[in-house]
Image (cartoon, rainbow over all chains, first blue to last red; front, side, top):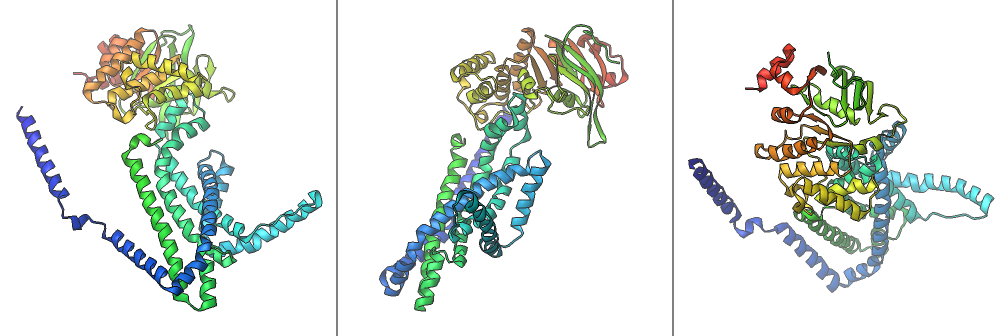
Length: 283
Length: 253
């Protein structure tokens, strides 16, 4: 009895303490950073709307948005496939597969993005496609051409596939081995256990960093400009170079990227919160 | 050393000369022989780290023995031509940590392997699942997620999940060790009932009461070896080996 009373009073104290902590003044918990960024974006928007030079830059640059978005989505989709394959490959029992996956990841991660894009777009793709086109022409009488945009997109995907491989590997390894044992001891095959038991649980650890990579890919599509692909950055460069209005050009470019990345960040935050709070939805 | 109560008759499980060595130096299981007849309940006891769980896990090849022969229901498990997934479907396993699938409901936990391995239809699998849930006493939890259940309830779901596969053998790896004391009985009751229905069972446990009530034979394992095998009352009352006696002296009051 006495023990029970003691426990109760302790609980009251803890609750009291929690309430005190909750009652911090509003300005202590208010997201000032968010308000500040929103204010800056609003100010930038006003500049673009009210000043002719900025409005002109906007008109010239904004058509690149669709290319940026398309390249982002394409690169992300291909990178997902590469990442899943290489991530699972690294955990394979087969020594050859394991080492191929590992080599890919280490090789790609060790080279900076810019030289890699040049190497793939200007050396590897032309040389292999020359050879392939010769064969195709000889056998079927057809040839194909890989656009610079596609070359750069594939390079981005190759790079992010290597990063994602690590994310997938980590996510799969974060699922306790007991889960695999339970699946296998029920008679499920390795593949069935991976698909129905391990991967769905790994997704919890995988989705947030994948979201970050999506945003990173979006930003890195700006590298496509070095190949002359007319996405946002390239259009900004062209505008600035032809009009000498560098401030206006890069101001608008930055504004567009900020809107996209911050919007995505907020979306991701909502998604993550829903995943942790509404745990019934975790499938 | 070990004596076989059933040598000569057909065994459901047969371990012969089974050894398991980790990292080439750690001898977890050393030359274990064990025969379990159909319908028999064998309880394995021993100090922690003695290799009891490893022996159990060799029976469905969660651990692959480094030496010896394992036969279950006539299948030679270490023969590369044996389809291990097929044998595992016949051997239910209950873990200390339950290992329910947290992303699936109780019902989905129990129907998953029925559908994928046994090829049962959805409605048939659900019917079996509900029957097994009723048997372990929690049919009302079918739509709950594992984390919403107590430890004892989770372990009963794990048992139902295994039983839904209509296994010929059930293996229990310290099924009550992770439970709060007040939940141990509800799990042991299910196991006792299963034993009385004639299920072939191998149980690693520290519950001597369960061993007394349900075991046909008790095997005492120490340092990876089977030190003594026999009827539980005999071993409790009159252990023949010093190591067995020392162990019971420590755990029985």
